[in-house]
Image 1 (spheres, rainbow, N blue to C red):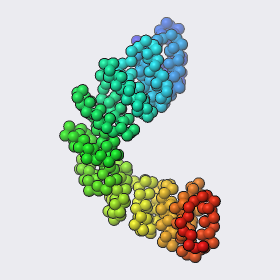
Image 2: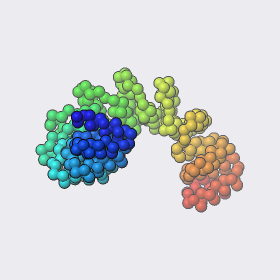
Image 3: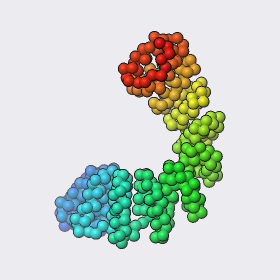
Image 4: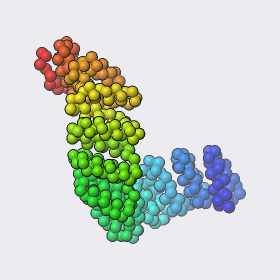
Length: 388
């Protein structure tokens, strides 16, 4: 009978008429119980109809149907997933106000809410308060707190928590390793990150492309190119496909090392493997080519980017304007400069400097002076003033 009631209510709810079957149940003295309301609330939130989910809860309270702990936990979890952080926190307090003792699921949900909202210190206290009350937190709760620590720069705390987790008999998951490895890699503690990477493999953890990318990015940023590419090869041997983020990490590492020829080879490999370049990819390539003064090649990438319908970043405009101006292509540089402004872009001092220098070099002193006056009004510092 209960299952029939839930199915009936959900069928009507899908048509936006949940009140009709509810009223019929009330007329026949079949008061919907918390299980029915829990199912309705959860399903409304899952299909993006959170306002109806809130209405269901209010209707339940109005009908003097007391919620149970499962319903309140579910409602709290739903509000969190819908981005209603304060509502979720209020529901945790309501659990206590209703006379219930929050269970491990209640605390796990609240911990998740606080971490995602950036309340690292509050999360830390709640986590240990929960343990002191005798609750055995699960791997998901540990993972949530560790991820919060890593994202707020408290990587040492995350590492300590990982060891604590092991001593309590909980096995770190791929999520655990992913959070801590990424946290360590981002603060250049790459040897420690790599040790964890090897530990995860020894435990037969099925590492994903995100974890490989964290290490590739970390090694690439500090110039350890060979190690970054070794990890990339291992990733491919495992049968995983590099995503656009991974490729961009490799390209950026090569640019910073001024290995532009290798960068071009890497870019072609990416395309051969059917990974489509994005805005970041083209920006990296244009910056790298301009950095080694291969401006004509950079312009080829600029044109390709335009054909793909990708909108350049401000720094990409600056690099390209500078490159064209320095190679004497002042007409193209001027056109690009004006298009950038017409699209709502605000050129920086580097763009103005490049344009003034380029115009000066081709004896367009009046145009250069006009730009100088424009920059003076904007308060920019101009380095090229020899044409006066």
